Length: 110
Image (cartoon, rainbow, N blue to C red; front, side):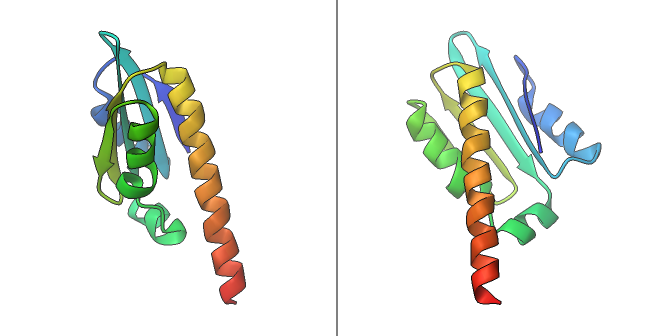
């Protein structure tokens, strides 16, 4: 997973970092007092974890950061208010939690 800040072009940068080999990328930045974030993952990450970036990550983060979040299983975005560093920390925490949940689900089904 790669998480970083960038002031603009977050979607393009996220696609580029995926192309370099990351399975999941989160890029956030502040633009004119607004928080903007973009998330991308590989199809393999989605299949292995069951994490839907739009539903499981972007939507709750959008609500938490007084904005909106939505997207698809492997591509999502958030617009809101707040500091991009706090956003990245919270996004990583949520993703870690979701990965732990998916591991527990897999172990219990075996």
